[in-house]
Amino acid sequence: MSTLTQSHHVAQALRFLAATNKYIGIGRTAAWDVETAPPAPSVIATGVDTPICYAPLSKACLVVADAGGAITFGGDTYLEVAPEDAYTVGATQVYVEAQLNGAAAPLVTYRQAALFSGLTKAGGAGAGILLPADVTDSGILEVLDNRRPTYRAADTLDVIAHLLQF
Image (cartoon, rainbow, N blue to C red; front, side, top):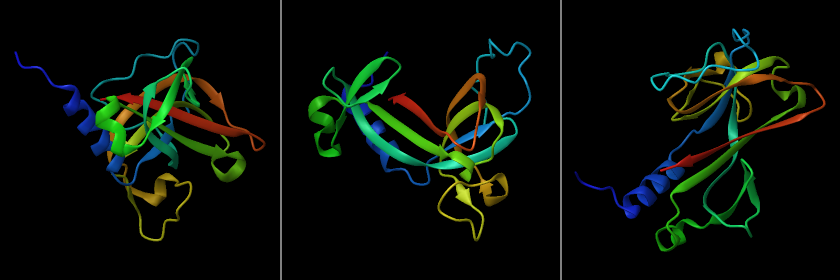
């Protein structure tokens, strides 16, 4: 069997970073059978259940695990890596985040967060938060996270982040 090299994984991370129209979407207002234990997401899913909105990424960067880094995710610390240094340091991970600021996004309870690439906006859609009617094609579902209920409030900033390993 052949082996994919580190250079291949770095190239995949760089390709993803260069992809356009990346958004984090939230969805699913219906309760899970057991709210404290959401089911594992399906690997063949193509979108979220009952889309609520899509937020453009506020940050997307290559990272490597490093105790001196400024990005914390899942209890670990990561250092941002410039694309030109990706092969030198073996950067095979991409960190992405989007922000849902107060009432700029619907004030609902959601149970899914997902990362999409290649999203197509409807004509006339703005540059910020997109509602389902503002989207003609959500694009490729890259990551899907089924989670416990998250309650959005007008006075909060929700930061949704994902760490992708290529």
